[in-house]
Image (cartoon, rainbow, N blue to C red; front, side):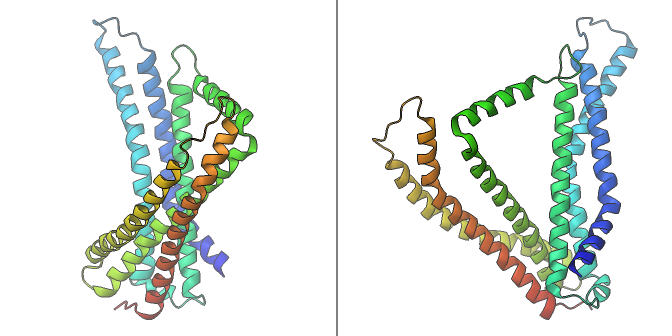
Length: 295
């Protein structure tokens, strides 16, 4: 049943977010064309005709549209995701949602998974848009600018020659932390919407905004306390590096030494984030199951 819920929620969001993502790609293409024209234009003729100046103005405007579209993309995706959550569970649609033969956990998992999927899709679209701009908009004398990618490829080859497959592990850790952190942020807003809907019948959104800041402050205090102890311990760890020397050609040994020393701090912070995320989920499930009032 969870699969059917995810499919339904994904299709519901797709009706709005899919055209939005296509529009962002379109804006990126138009903006890239505009920037490329301006970038390669000859500005030595200060007496250019009004038509040329108009073209420059329009192409500059297209470039601005691209930047605005990319900035607005993440905001719009988040707004639609949380608007659908609020409408499906906290408004009159909630009567229908909670009569479905599914558990409260499945409802929450469905909302979280679809939100994560669309967040990833939005990030990929932004990444593609930026690469379209770099590839086709920044070449001075060529249609396609591959210089940046050539430099990146050269750097990656150097890293691979020095570290080999060991570099994959910190990349996987970073991806894991980003995924858990994203889920934590989504569930934090879900929890604020749920609490706001429970404590206030007339001003649910305002109450939700207030509780979001309350939750955020409480978690920030806990995070600051954790970072205080971790930072002190980390300083001690780096002090222990005094007297340890590596030759210029011993980059692998230095990497292993530093990376190994930092692992306890990464996993401590990751565990903290995971615990907070689980607390958001469990509290949200409890409130939806036992305290929600849709009157």
